[in-house]
Image (cartoon, rainbow, N blue to C red; front, side, top):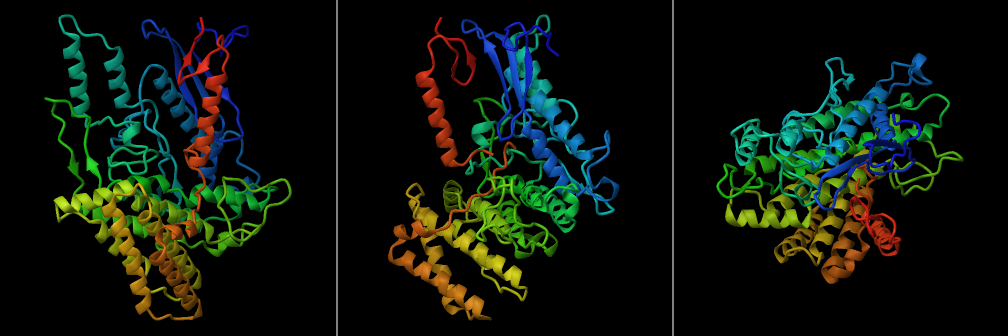
Length: 521
């Protein structure tokens, strides 16, 4: 704790400050530096309290803990949700301190037994032999091997008689021998990123197996979902707050798996080093990744059970809807198909990313053994337009997924930034769906109405393709990172606000320039 008479902005104190907030926001680790030398004078970390709430929600959904004598809450000193949330805060504190001393994100560290706090860690959950969900290893304890290597590289002192160049080269060699790569933000954050090992909020070296593990945890937790996710005395409508991060639990592992599709394995290669040249992810791995992604949006994985649909009542006075919840088409009543539409939109947006689509085209041009964009379209169409089955809820979910896929194809075909080869193949895929529907027979009136609905959209696309894109649905998935980058519109508003502050800041104050930097002396 700081001395009582100390000011947190006093340059003599390194500070970790706790910021209580009721809305989403990042935590930050930054430094005051001497502009003449680059020397770090003071480290200043801001930790946001909402991160505790987000982890608590994640744990509530997986454990459903409020039953029996714990219906009103766990006893003091025995709160597994709080334990998990505090384990995350410890990791976050170390992460932000790492930034203050100059360390960048390393989003490849989670591939090597969580080798760095400078990655973004997802809570590791597994299904135990008794069918319960185990959170005992949710977060790592302490800093990782990459962190130690990075500090040695930045702050280590060569041995007597050893040159600095040799010392630094030895540190890099140790990292290579440990199998720890370094891949940071530009190669990990974009939705069309190609590096299969650089991911945010993921766990494990095998992306496909990790996705299957996350899907199983999610499935078990959804089966156990009930009143026990809400403390007694609170509105049952609040179960939806818990449902959202649980239903979307595998959202980041989905993104990591999607990067295998048309993925490129590479490092920051320097002339003369031992890093391998860029290489496409093997074709069989890419196809397995696509199959795993399609398994995620199978109707049986998207349908909500009656234990959930009948539980979530309309929100009472004082508990308005907010962006943390699923969008709905049912007014005040919970929409049982909105979660499926949001998750399907999430998965399909990665499959149909224009940059990934272009790589699919080009990789198949060079090597016929690798998946092609047309091959991906055919595989998806074969899964999404299969026989609907007899379960009406699953059939409705399948129709939701078909709509999301068709909308995604139309947007890709009319995207002015998409490569011409991609737009041509997407246009053909829309017509292919029309040909399939023209030959299908409808098992009942619902499917007959649906078939005519899709056919009318396809005819409109054929007649006026660019105008038809205005009629596609654009469903927003609830935010994820902090725990999510804001939507594009929110990002634009944020950027405009920052620009305003920069233009109108007093010359005698500190301006926001990405660092805490004194100006105007």
